[in-house]
Length: 201
Image (cartoon, rainbow, N blue to C red; front, side, top):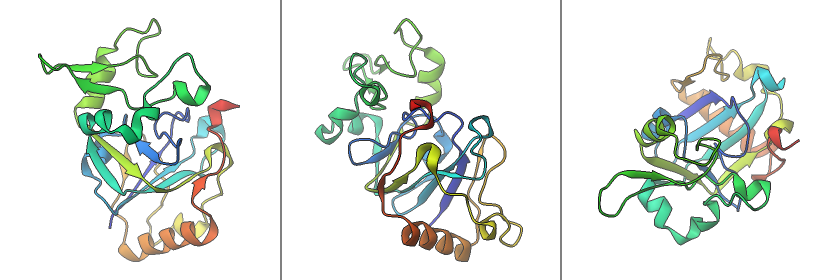
């Protein structure tokens, strides 16, 4: 079991998308989406820009890993397709990529990763589809801007800090640390959607 940690730089409810009873990571963090497997954990911590440095934003235990095309076609995740004339939650849908049936070219529907006028953003499409995988979690804990502070134990565990300070991610944590972090998350919190994304307020 691996644990990936990164800073949630923009907490819009898009990446991750914690709605409709399942947490999904379908855009951004391509290296994590490529590397993580079923049973691994992904932890997102707060951004200094939000005043949330050192706090948990979310944690997810990966239960499935799908390709973009599997995700798009799966009827369980139709609600995750963005509907930009609906509620804020509906506009944040992350089920946005599929291939053109004839050309095989990636199509990105109008979403948070489109241009302001709704046209496709080639940079986002290229970056997101480089690793066309979606991480899905039935067990997840999403606090948005109201997450708990990460205990000092996990900020300096044999010189390992759970909080990633740079823009990338970290995952080479000692197994005893991973087990203790997971136990803390599971024992202290009921898994569910707990609070709205920081940007909603």
